[in-house]
Image (cartoon, rainbow, N blue to C red):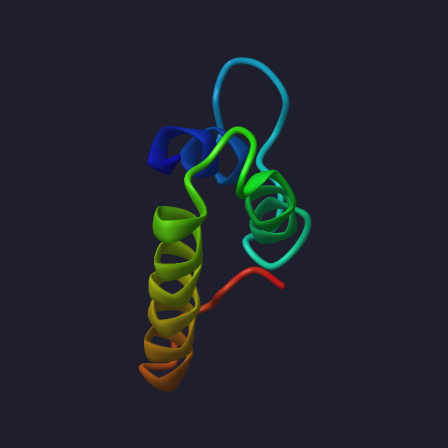
Length: 64
């Protein structure tokens, strides 16, 4: 799941990065229960959101 998120939000040699707010988290949420274990997906997304909030509080630029 972490690699999937990284592939969607990081710049790689193939498709450009997506936003960390949409659709990447929405895609993980949508696939919870099929491609991803929902017991892992939901806590993972909570960590992603907490990280975004902490980075914004420090004044870092966080993609919308």
